Image 1 (cartoon, rainbow over the protein chains, first blue to last red):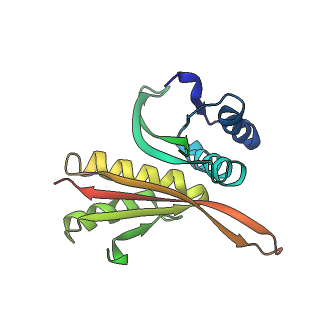
Image 2 (cartoon, rainbow over the protein chains, first blue to last red):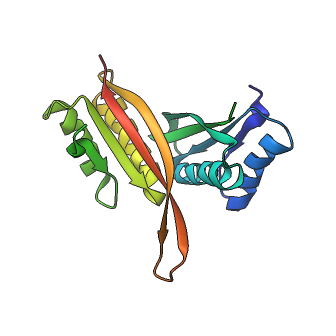
Length: 94
Length: 94
C-alpha cells in the first residue's frame, strides 16, 4: 500500500485527523487507511479510528487489523528508551 | 475464559500491572491473559503488554488478538460521552 494512506497521530486538533481518515476513504477512494501512533498518542489513535469508523463512516468502514510493537531509541542523555507503537488498519467493507 | 485472567489497567504503579500479567502466565499457568483499558489508559495497556511480552516473557508469550471499541455513557451533566476501549489478548506460544 502507498505510504500516503498512513495517518500519523500527534498534537494537532483531534478533528483534523478524523477528517483526514474520512477523506482518504471518501474523496481519495482508498481501500485501506493505516492510523499510526507512538507513546501517549496511542489512545488518541484509537479515538480517531473509532470516531471515523463508527460516527462518520458507519457501516462502510471497519477495523481490519491492529498491530502493537516497541521501538528503542537513545534519548538526549544517551540512555536506551523504549516506546510503544500502534498501527490500526481501517478497511472499506466489501 | 475465566474473568480473573483479565487485567484492567488504571492508575496504579506501572510495574504492578506488568507483574500481574507475568504472574498470570508463570505462577498461575494461564494460557491467555487479557489486558483491558479505557480512554487515556489505552496507551498504558499497550506499554504493559509490550513490556510483559517482550522483556519478561520474551519468546514464550505473544499478542494473539487486539480489539478496540467504544462505550457510551452519561456524564454528570447528563451529556452522552463516548470513550474508546482496548482489549489486548496475550497468549502463551504453543
